Structures are given as C-alpha cells and as structure tokens.
Image (spheres, rainbow, N blue to C red):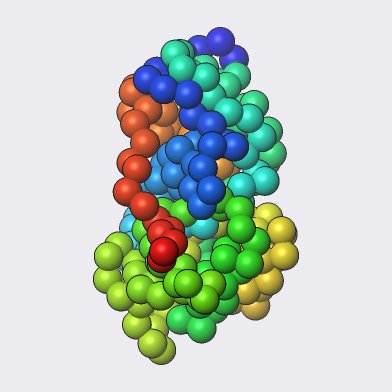
Amino acid sequence: MQTVLAVAPEPLEKMTGEWQTNIGCLMADASMAQGDSVFVKRTGGHLDFCLLNHGGIRASIGKGNVTVGSVFEVMPFENSLVVVTMPTAAVKELVDYIIREKKPHPLSGLSFTINSSGKAENIAIHGVPIQENASYHVLTSDYLSNGGDNMVFFQGQPTLTLDYKLRDVLIDYFRKSRTLKTRYEPRITVEK
C-alpha cells in the first residue's frame, strides 16, 4: 500500500469545480486511455467517450507522492469497466441527466454547452458533432451500467465487460504516467 506510483504536482480534489473537477477529469481520462487499449484488442474499435459518477470518487489526492493506498482511498469499490453501445437518443438522455443532476460527473471525450435555457447545445464527441441515428461506445462502470445513481439510460443497451477494475485502471495509469497531469479543456461550458 505504501508503494509510490506517481507524483501529483497539485492537489486533485473532488469538491473543487462546478461541472468538472481535476480528479474527475483525470479518472475519466485514465479510464479512456487504459480502457481503449483493451477495447481495441477485443473488438478492433475505439471508445467514443467515458462517463463515471462523482459519488464514486471517495477521496481527494494531495500534492506529492501518490501511493497504492491513495488509489484505494479514492476508489474503495470493486467496480469494473464496461462498454455500453448507445444510440444517439440515449446519449442525449445522458447529457440531459448530467444537466439535471448538476454534479461534476467525470467525463472524457464528450463535450457540450448548456444554453441560457438550461438545454444542451453543441454536443460533440472528440470535437465532432454528435450524429443522429448513430451508435456510440461509452465506457462506464458496471455499477452505472446497471442503473446505479439513476443512470437508467444505460439499461437495456448492449454491454461488453472489460474485466478491468477501475482501481487497477488507476494504478496502471498512474504507474505509467509517473507525474499526474490533468487536462483542463472544458468538457461542459455554460452560455452566459
């Protein structure tokens, strides 16, 4: 548990940020990076985006050394990654859910703007506008894919289990990264 995996040049906090947090962005980006390599090997395709839940992050990470124990504090659950194949309509339900919940759920690969009426505009996946009548490979946890946190839009959709615990994802990503850098590009913006 005391093994040092990486160094955090700044605190990674759960409660700092209205629509996104630096620890949430890091977790979603790490899940995308690690999960995509597994998904490519299994299917030949790539992941489109990742959604995790804010409540699943159980601790912050302080500036300095990040240990295996730190990861267990952040992610004490046995959650595993799954890929849900979702039609465009379900992706729009997912976006509406995020707006309604007003929580900084970890996102990677998906972006949108909340307009002055509180509705989503400019929904994009890796910068490309969402397409009607398409399907998207969404990375999430088994807990959420089963409707946890009222994320019912995942239920009834084709699902592939990656057999990769979220805790192990973080350990592998941190060990490989050595220095934890969070990308700060806005995933959710609010029109003023």
